[in-house]
Length: 254
Image 1 (cartoon, rainbow, N blue to C red):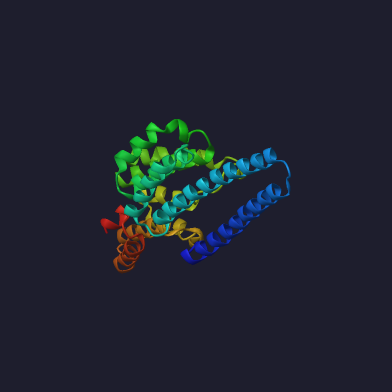
Image 2: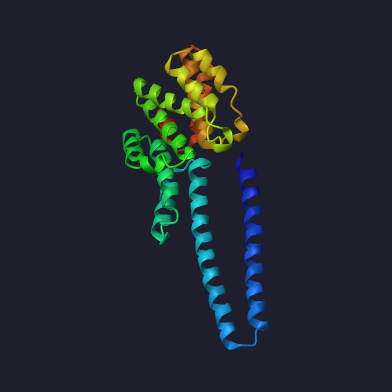
């Protein structure tokens, strides 16, 4: 999804949400105005204020979180994404975004090129990642990328084997977080079957990718083409990845 579409959908959803909050506030005001008893007025007023305060706090934190995700996945600005994460952690008094930050940190550490630290983070939080199939998929998918960049062929293969087992799970139980064609492509890449890797990567629907994901795709395709001595096209894709990926570590080695 490109940034224009993302922003359009975002603002439409936000607009509808704020209309709902406004209607709720008006309704509470109406109840207070039409109620005769002082005690009931105070009850409605107190409950309304509490509900709106909690809701507005959540929306404020959610807004920071969405900006954080946008900075990472669309702008590919690691410094900005990390700054927003620190703000969110500081102001999230009830730890409502704690689990989301665990997932975010795994992506951020990968994008920063801190592969060993990322693997330690995954291991430290493995109970959390094993709590749902979606989280487990993220766990092994991130492992796969870390081991791939570390050239740890044995563990790349193990991570892909774990992901392959998840492929047989009923689709309605998983949200299709990543493309199986990408996973197959990485598997072929590490088998040095570069033409097979490229054929799998070509099957990926690029319209469903954000800039972060597209950067990794372009990088892998570029590396495959270089192995096949198609240097002109390979370097072109790597240059495109560098321009799109901004501060991602994978673009710094191009």
